[in-house]
Image 1 (cartoon, rainbow, N blue to C red):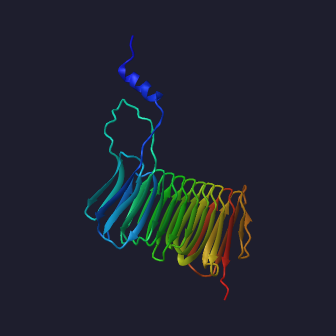
Image 2: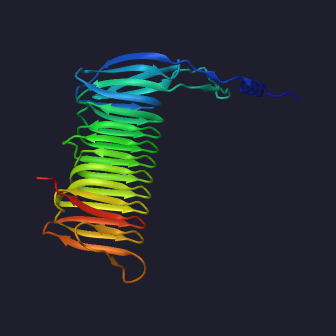
Image 3: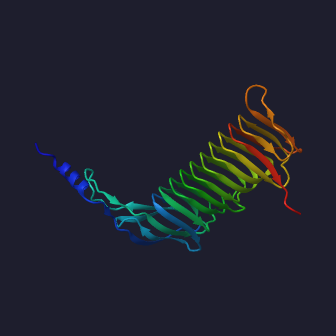
Length: 307
């Protein structure tokens, strides 16, 4: 009984050493709307996005394989950039073993553009853009300077964000990556699983922080009618308000952690079972601070700048 020919092809492929696919340079240019939307998808490696004053998009750098190409498509004011494998010779029964080098791309876009990016195993950096940003990566680090609204989500990558005074919506999420945020105000939403969050913000109008085991170190002001909420399982909250302690209603609760403030209030144990609660009113304002943890600690303080 003879083996099928497809099996011989499989065995031959497996017996061959891994083939390294050669990378190649790319330099593509397309005209673009100065206030348009730019989308970058399906790129692995590293992508640097830079805003400039030209009404065009430039994609330059090195592609991961000599069979890869940059595909740039436009529809209305939206331009899409992706890397595709143009090798169409592979059949469904053939196995090709090769190591694909990662792409390294520098993408220049009009400065007024809005950007969305969805990348796989790629680091992403963004600077000099004036539009909104919506960025996602599975296992890469995101470093960006945001002028306006920004949404960033990673799985295992860190987030480094510098937000301008007009950045009034921040939506950040990561599974195991850390967050380092400077600037931004208004509506803030942050979700982590195990990553550390360090945030220095402006005035908060509505903020929600959630974590499983990651700690938050937050410095911010709270608007007169603002709301600050936080929930965690085992993560700690260390919150420092800029200026005087906000005039607000405070409601802090933990099952087995510690509750402390530098305002003088002391936590009280629950009447039934374990747990501590600290409820008090500071001043006559209408703001609210609500923090709830299972085993994490909560620490509140205020920092008055030196006169």
